[in-house]
Amino acid sequence: MQQFRRILSIILLILAFTSLSGLSNEGPIDESAVLKTGNLTLLQKKEIFLEKEMLHISLEGDFAHVYGYYELINPGPEDEVTIGFPVDFLKDSEIYGIAWQQESLPYYQLSDENGKLEIKEYIDEKPQVVIYDGRKRDVLRRWYVTEVKFPANSCKKLVVKYTVRNSLLDMDSVATFFPLYSDRLFTYFFVPNEGWGNDIINWFQVIIDVRDNIETGTVIKSLNLPGVSSYGGLFIYETENFSLQDAPELKILYDNSASLLTEFVNAYQIKEDNILSLRASSKFTDHTVDKLMDLDFSTAWVTGKEGNGVGEWVEIKLKDFCLQSVGIINGVTSNEKTYNSFNRIKKLKIEIEQDEYDFFADRAKKRKIEQIVDLEEKELSTFNQKAFAPFISVLADLGQTFNKTYRVRLTILEVYPGTINRTGISEVFLMGYKNDQEFIYD
Image 1 (cartoon, rainbow, N blue to C red):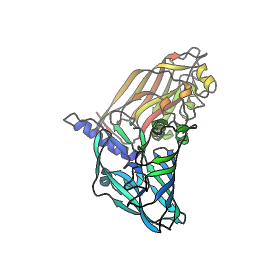
Image 2 (cartoon, rainbow, N blue to C red):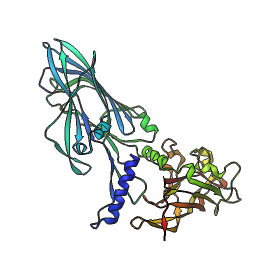
Image 3 (cartoon, rainbow, N blue to C red):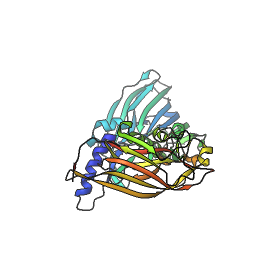
Image 4 (cartoon, helix red, strand yellow):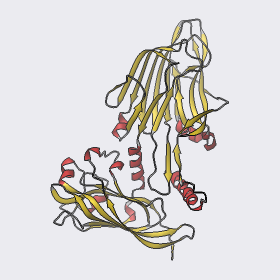
């Protein structure tokens, strides 16, 4: 995804400079090919009844892992029926190829008491037109179909297992370093093509497990199951005489941008071989400047001179690095006591020395960026070390530039006072990418 994002960013950059009609330089960078998945369905009218159904849905990042258990009753003579599992794909995915579809539905399996069943695939000839993300989209329904033999007066047990990438639409712009992550949406629909007998499930249960996602900063925004019980990230819904015809689509809407942004920051954080030097105006005991870039939030640099730290600074000199964003974890975040004891920065000055690269002339000149930044006070209770990106105070967002940077200096101008009159920073983030290209200078 990262390589694709950078290639697309270059295209967007060209559009931003060459557009004569005021086109936006924002564009999509990521999307799932799957819009929604559906219930096991009889593809012809038969007197086969759905006695029990249990769905277990587990969220993992952008994906949902689904386990479906079905007990089917044949009250009549021996019969063979055709059963289909529907998946709605965006028709655009045909353009981008089968790999995109496979990435969005990487695993599917249907089994009975004797093991895996043979599956064939069919696609509805006529696409559906839906409104998705505010625009019309063509959707093709693909059926994963199998033949199931029912002995007379028998009960058949089927298990469906699959993994699906939930609906998303992430955007990117050359004007900012950070991408914009959309909410994720898992959608499951129940309306059958022909239907199970009377389309009533005698016993129906849904278990939704979002515990792992919540640990990594995910917020569940909505879950449209009335009467669902919640147990710390485990949602359980159970009912009798569940009507397939009357059931709305099951939708789980969630925001996992904290985890995604954290992965993004880690991917673009400067590497050690691009740092020439890291120094500070002073230090307090063992809170040395090297603690600023160790990705350990239990350590910090703390000012050593007497006073609240105003006027003290840290400076990083770089080599062969195109800087695109600067951020810090403000304060000493090892625990609540240290966070409240040491001062946090309220205002600072950031200085950046870098090239200014002319994309079309393929030439560069030196420039210095200097600006004053106000930092919002943050509550440590909102700090999740597994998904720390929302806690970063962004000091500079230079967009997706090609400018080499040589020096970054941060100078403290004002602080939020703690009980100890010294100021700390737990981490500094210099985000961008290595570039050892030699430029021609004016």
